[in-house]
Image (cartoon, rainbow, N blue to C red):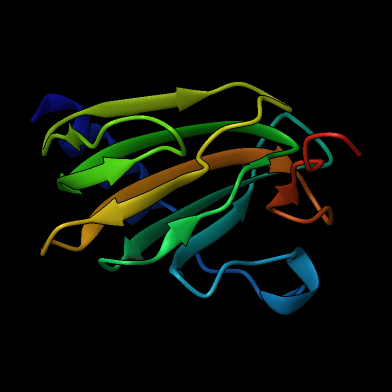
Length: 137
């Protein structure tokens, strides 16, 4: 709960800034941007707070970010990676992905929608999501 409160305080403290559209940033239709602001003291960096909702049957494609992603699972769900058994991504779990770290690649299985609050600290003006190269390419 302390992490959620901290992330909420960060999110509330950010001001939504005008600028590049979601489509220009290589966005996901599963993501709702809440706030965006320049990162003070770090020219060329910005902070983006979002809610991600992945419905049953939907897949979060393999991707990376031009910066760091921190996340809190608001509502957990069963997920399944290719060639692996389903596993529960529990409510209250935290996730942390470093710059250029390829992650996701799972499908939400079962009846629940996965809801994740994310905070990205990324290079300003670059796509938020960078698709991962397909195996063998």
